[in-house]
Image 1 (tube, rainbow, N blue to C red):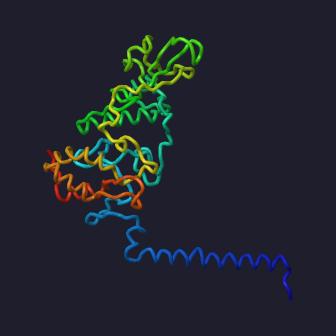
Image 2 (cartoon, one colour; image 1 turned 120 degrees about the vertical axis):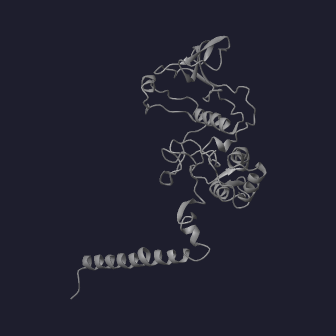
Image 3 (cartoon, rainbow, N blue to C red; image 1 turned 135 degrees about the horizontal axis):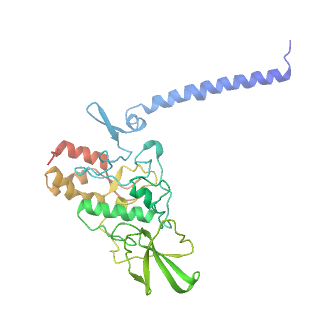
Length: 302
């Protein structure tokens, strides 16, 4: 007895699904899983995990923070670059960037009533410029160097003015506001083109101002390297630049009670080359470097 055409077509489709499921959903994954467990491939396939004793302490290919429970840097360790992956950073399940670009220079100010009550204003946002400025000041204090940076105030926010002209974007200047310095703070600049500079007030509308970033007198090449104040695209880069590692060496040596020369020897040992030999810049794997410090120069509470 011949089956109807529509039934034959459905049976053929079911057979195709079963065969392809067995081949591509079961057999192929098992073969690939078996191949990647061969010597030389196993570590990469399993996440390049790093173990100390019976504990897994991280991955060679994922960055992590070396901070205390309050997010403060652990001074005995080299610090990773900042991370925008997740609320606290370095979250492998939330890999990503802040998506803020070079035009992000004006902060969304917090409600001063919430700040006075010790609460967080969920609507407040720091611009990329202010984030960079604040990080530069913090790193400068930690490493005992100048945290000065172009287009940043000494207090660690963007040196950005909102300039009002009589005819919109032209004509005499009638008012100037330091957009990222919330009242009652003192503006970083007293006067601009003869007009007194005001602090910014919460809720005020400055959308009609011409935004001008003021470079200031900070050096063109700041003491704090760029990767110390900017997050990577993934937020999970395991390396820092050799310049940032060298900046941290005196602090780490002091905390570990050893010489800077010894710490620099370890930096050289864990230095990585350019990707594929020509892309990017040499770096230093932070996790491996810190583990080496723990082995050779254990930290003792001072």
